[in-house]
Image: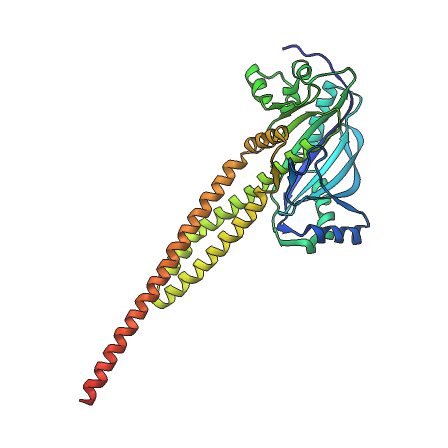
Length: 373
C-alpha cells in the first residue's frame, strides 16, 4: 500500500505510566494534603463532552499538576508537561505530554518511538518513579494499606488535532501509515498484520478517528476533547487492578491448601479452633477483595453515550479485563467454597465434642451411682 506524506500542524505525544499503590485512596484527604504541602491546587476529572447521565466517574479521580521535566528525545532536549491522576481504588496515573506539532508523519512516528524508548517499560529512565515518589511523599496519609511493590502498566497516545490540509477519518486510514505508528516497527508490515493492528478503529464525526492497540492508540480529534484518552486510561487502570487481585489470589490459593491441612490435623478441639480461625480469615479476604473489585469495575458508569461506550468496551476487551475479572471471580469462588467447608467442619467437630461431653457426663453419673450403691 502506498501512503501520502502528511504534515501535522498541531499534535502531541502522551505517555502514561499507571501504578498500583494501595487498596484505596481517600481523594478528599489527598487533595487537602497536596494543597497544604505542595502549594498547588488539584481538581476532579470530569469528562468534557459526555454529560453526567451519559457517562461519568462514580468517584471522579483527582488531577495533580507536577513540575515539567526535560527529556532527551533523539538528541533533542524537549520539555514535557507532567500530571498525576489519583483514583480512589488505589491507582495513580503519571502522565507525560510532549509537543509534536509541525512534524511530517514519518517524523511524528519516529518521535513516538523515541518517546517509547525513553519512557517505556524497557527503559531505565527514573522519571516515573521520581514523579511517583514526589506524589506519595505528600499524600501518603491518604493511602489505605499501601502496596509494598507497585504493579505497572504503560500506554502511549499519539494525538493529532490538526493536519496542514483538511482530513477526514477515512482519508487518514487510507493515506497514513497507522500500522507503523502503532506497532513501532520501521520495516514494512504484512497486509494481515496491518489489518489486525488497525482493526479497532472508531469515528463519530467525519473528521475524527480513534485506533486502539494493546499498548498504543492514535487519536485524531480536531476539537481537543480528551474524553477518549480519559476512558482508555480508566480501562488500563482496571487492567492494572485486576492483575493485582489476580496475583494476590494466586498467592492465597498457593498457601491455602497447606493451611487447610494444618487446620484439620491434631486434636479435635484444637483442629476445630484452627478451622474456625482460618474460615474467618478466608471470609474476610473474600469480603475485602469482592468490595474492592466491585469498586474498580464500577469506576466508570456508561449509560447513554454509545460512541464512548463502544471505545470503552473495546479497550476493556483488548486489555483482557473481562477475562481477568472472570479469573478473579473463579478464585474467589474457590476460596468461598473452602470457607464453607471449613465452617461446616468446625461446626461438625464442635457437635462431636458436645456429644462426647454428654456421653462422658452420663458415664460419670453412672459411675457415681454405682459407687454410692
